[in-house]
View: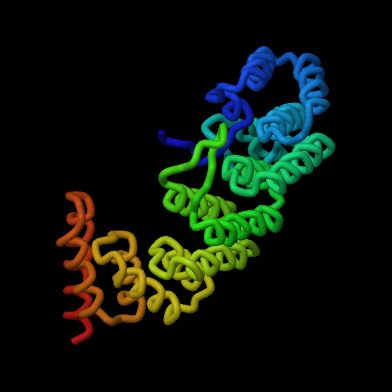
Length: 302
């Protein structure tokens, strides 16, 4: 069963078979918040040893806390936005976009209840990913990073034997966990906030502590090193990544680009040649054009 990287609130209950949770799901889809609240009160009285209660209560608070509105950004966000120009200074442009806001009261309550659920059922990966997703949406990236690292550490402790929605034991716990961890790391990168590069490093180094052959994590460290203009370390990271996956086109392209930057044209040509060997038609065309340009640079160097 293919699982989603994100856990949008309305998805938690949709595939569960427990009768009470099915009832909650129907109330959720009907947007009956009063009905949800009453059901949660009854559910809670029956005891707190049902993991689905924590999932439902988390959803209730997340949904209550989400508010759609209008925001203003310096850059366009999403496919629909309105460009606005300062009438007094036409060089100043800003964008009105649809945004989702979170009311702290409900989001805090959601985080409290899902944290309690995780403490009781620490091998429920859906709960952990739900918490991480909400922290990311709320842009609490320090807490977001700490929770991602907790997942990596605990995965090693339980030998990647994670459970999913409904208590199902996952048959791909390690791979699915690592895929999502990489998606969360990419989310940090996509913020374009250099202050969060250290968060990317913390996550990637934690992955490598347990999985030394993680090409994605080595590449993350390489990218951060490039941004920090530590090109020597970046090259070391990408070369190590190549040693584990010799046909990774992105890794090969990063190595080739670093060699071009260092004016090591022989090695640059060598690595673009590897892209020709392993890449698809588009990759090959790109690499051949790069090789042509490198040959011209080598002539000029002579």
